[in-house]
Image 1: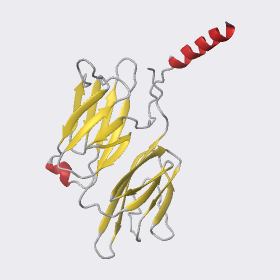
Image 2 (image 1 turned 45 degrees about the vertical axis):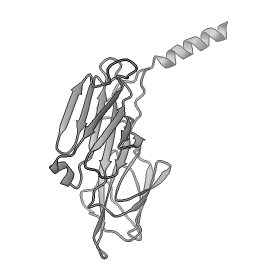
Image 3 (image 1 turned 30 degrees about the vertical axis):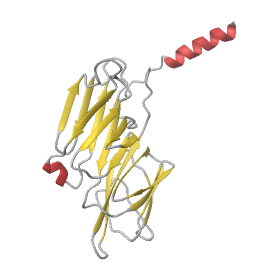
Image 4 (image 1 turned 90 degrees about the vertical axis):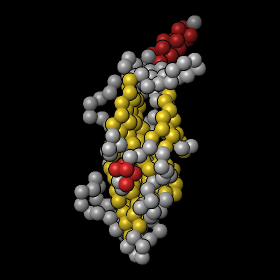
Length: 227
């Protein structure tokens, strides 16, 4: 009897935890993303296309949804699905880049889902492959490894190490970066992921010039949400 009472109190206490946002803290991007059939949690790179079908699931009700690129910010209140057997956490929409977005060498999409009462906010980051970015790389990020065709993203806890490896020597801007990149052979780069979002560009001029864009997302905390 005592054990049952203790367990009930413990369970109630755990399920009642709600974490408030701390000002200045960069939280993990953990919105569920599916774009043109490609899916991931929080951060995603998708192949280049003239238009994109987004299917997203936020961690809380979409009382406010935001979609931001280098050219636009679209907002919608009460943006979740309506009707029977649908979810206030889900939203589906199409995105056709304008000329300024399609021609820009860097124009990712940032998504935000905000909930009024419970505060179960969530965020997402989607980058798009581009015809001018064709330098491949092997990316090791947060315990996983994948091949990138020219655009890559790495989301991990700030302060952890990542690695990106190119098939041939590359050049990179040495000023204005979030971290000082060093490589012994100009092919293998291993470095500590900085806080928040940072973009790196690598290029080669041996033969045809090729470029690669890497975005790191270094989160500081994970947002705990109440069901």
